[in-house]
Amino acid sequence: MPKKYHIDIKATPLNRDFVSKFKIARGENCINCGKCTKVCIYEAHKRGAKDPRKIDDPHMALCKNCFRCIQECPRGALVKSLDPDFLALGGSYWKPDMLLSIWKQAEDGKVPVSGAGYRGPFTGPGFDGMWTDMSEIVRPTRDGIHGREYISTAVDLGRKLNHLNFADTGSLASNIHQTVDLPIPIIFDIPACKLSNNIMTSFVISAVAAGTFAIMPANDISADIKQYINNIIPLVSPDKITAHQSLISGARLVAIEYATALLNDFGSVKDSIKKISQAVTIVRIPAMTGIEDAVTKLARSGAEVIHIVADYRGMEAPGLRQRFLKDVVRAVHLRLIEERIRDEITIIVSGGIAMAEHVPKAIICGADLIAVDIPLLVALGALLYEQPEMTITLPDWLEKLPAATVVQRIVNLMGAWHSQLLEVMGAMGIREVRRLRGETGRAIFFDEIDKDTFGKLFQQRETASI
Image 1: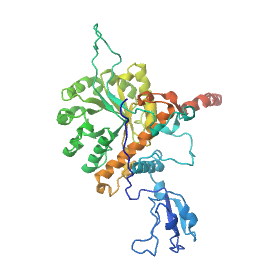
Image 2: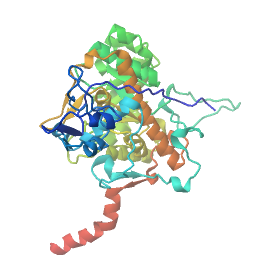
Image 3: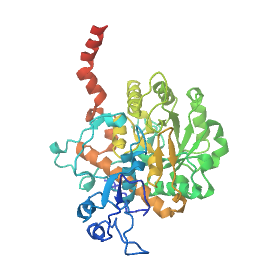
Image 4: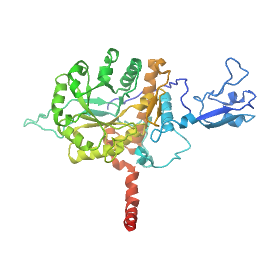
């Protein structure tokens, strides 16, 4: 049995304020008695360093919302309320709680657990309309992250054979394709922001530490970063392959930007790469109308890995219909099954992957693995706003963060997401993530249940009104 994959997490607070969900206001009737400093075990309240006679403003990054300071204040001088800055974050898809959750996971590497239970709606847009099977009651032996049972999260990237051929002598006659093994079904897709070389290098080192890869535009790979080429996926356009052959020659994976011409000429592009390196080729294609046909044609042409990229909300490009990532992936997965070629290629998906639970949900829909992007920046303090248009604000102090701190926070985030994946798989009784792919029977899709339950009823009403 192979050695268990493990991510070494370590609490790595930044000691800097992220946007907090609540704020505590200290009224004028405060007598600076210090009662709040004594009852707060998290040290959110402290006396002033310059003037110990006064109490400093609350340190909300340390506050755990236990409300003890509010209850114990003899003058009722403390008031807690929702922070307007927190409510202004995100938008219709990236909720403020999502960003805060990512921040906390990067800090301690643990999946946040609330003892209050789930009090939100049981459906919503995107992945929120999908419920996974977590029937641990009928599987008392499952232990998820506790480690007594072996659960493999490893995946293979590359072309697989549909069947094997053997010679008359019994020897294998089929030509086995080159594949790359990953211990976790997650790779990094570094967002297109103005990041310094130090931060970019730290992202790549994080990928090395997690045993995965980082996708980077070839033009952004400096000499300092190139030394980690074993864990870098250079992203190049089809007409720039020769210009970047020094990078491609050392890479194990190479990503090619999609162009319509690839549908008719992918073979020559693949041959151009094979002349330089034995790297596995990834075709990076935007989620768009007709993507099922494009992916099928690429697979028929010998594509090894397809990377489907949705927008930051997980939506495909506007067209006759605009689907969410889970619906796009299911459509592609089912088309490839109909064509009897699904097992021959690897599917990567990205866009709208915002929470740990989105990883197993995307795989259940038919992906082999996911690429994470925006959460990498949020883990370092970036703020995301959707209105009036999507913007990502990087903190002023980002460039001052030590590389070791950046690396550990990204590793912590991956540790939390990996633990969540183990929990889901353990609860389902699945011991290998490859078996989770396309297992839609282990999930409930609200849209389908709603249609089956009420579709005919409302259709009859519409017909009667006409």
